[in-house]
Image (cartoon, rainbow, N blue to C red):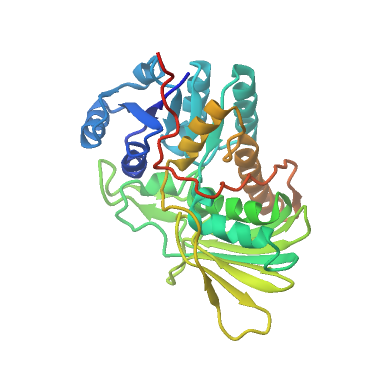
Length: 371
């Protein structure tokens, strides 16, 4: 096929605002349909972003103009919708997590291989200028030999009146599955794959009350830890220490420091695409700002990279191997919590190829073939 890639967005919830705002501005993509189990919500989002059609999931999967499905459903539905999209002959971009069980992640990879289709998974923030610049410094040897990393994510957690409070505090969510993908992906792009993990965790408030919506007033049990600490070792030798908390009165988000034998890099928030990169050499008194390279962008560039990779016949960067390894690492962290022991991460992956100089999401590179 030639020309812009046709896209279906499945899932018209909150995150679809960011995706649709970007996907509809990338010239190499054309959003053809927005789908949701709630058809009125799909129609509203389609109208808001100038998408020509809306409808059901079945309609989106049957649309011959759609090459890539962007799966923005809730975590418990990611596996089912991605599998259905692959069976329908579509390439898939899915929001994180890749799945909620290890066997599901493996089945998704096999299904994509058997169908000859691409599957990629959020986060794609590592393709933004901030993390690409930090990666470039590491690759250029500016920090010397990588030694360690520190990541901190501490907030009070979702507010009591969050409309999806119960969903955020159940299987497939919590700070581990909701937040860790950003930090683990950034660490994998810095050091390569994880080798082992050991973790501790607790839940400060195991019972919560829903305050809005049809279930308002109902009490429910929190089924995931809300404060997780992880010590990880990487195949290449470095280690990292990470805190993921929804129980803290402090608000420290986006804290990543990568240390080598020569210097330390302060890496931008991995939940964002831009941000300041700073370098502090050993013995220096001050941090030195490093200008970020690349054009600003947002959620959806992973989908764009899949589209361009399909046309060019090259691997896409937010690969299923990377997605599965990050997911497998989170499952391994959960197993460490259950066993109270160090757990080997069995999967592996390579680091994604850096974006080339001048890579521009707003350039039109996929043109229709001449008649």
